[in-house]
Length: 195
Image 1 (tube, rainbow, N blue to C red):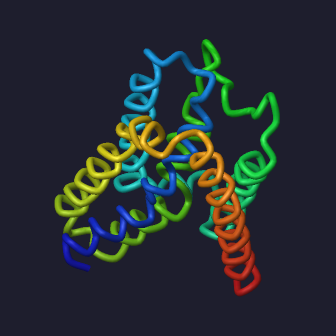
Image 2: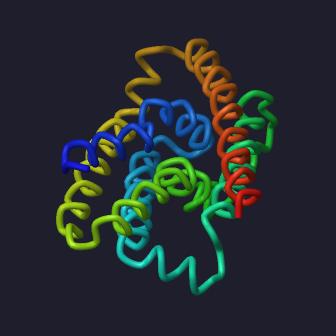
């Protein structure tokens, strides 16, 4: 895998455009002056998770006795629950669980920015060619930076599209996220049964 293909793979797996409506939904009750700070914080946490996964992910999973199929199944279940809340919104949507009603780590940093599929890509890069860790670190940083630029503009994208369009996009993304979560779950299950 070349450096460019690693960046593009990570960028598309992180899916920043698909995450825009999810971020808008998750941050709808956060005061406007705090929104960009929360997004920046979650992006930095996501970068930390990515770098930790790159350098220590394989050892950590082995130490916790967690295999790849379990990671995929758990990620599928979490994404499915998030998708259901997007399609069938409730007054208390469960996103705001941190201080002052702000989401903290879950679901923004993990699993939306850095989900099991992103962790898997990073793990595969590190496992297949550990001699290129400097390049993989650069690829992670560039993909994260591109992702960050889009997510930090998510509120401007929301204003441009309007509330009705964002509701429609959010529900559509919920449907797509449901399909992705089922696929992730089934892939993890298939890997588990093949063992």
